Amino acid sequence: MKSKLYEYDVIIEQDENKVFVVSVPALPGCHTEGDTMEEAMDNIREAVELYLEHSREKVENPMRFVAVKKLSFQRSSVAGA
Image (cartoon, rainbow, N blue to C red):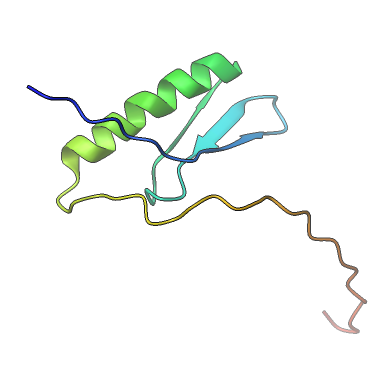
């Protein structure tokens, strides 16, 4: 049996408890976490495999990673809000 190589961009964040949270933008709802970066990456690999195994539709990677940008802005106070 021939195996296929899958590649997905993942987003890795760290929450206020220092837990690594990983998500796959191309696979809605596919996310996990881990106490270390390595654990989080192992967990997301398993989550993606399960996602693809149970997906009813053919899943492709339609998005191509371009960049991460920081958005900064100020909000003015609104009376009564």
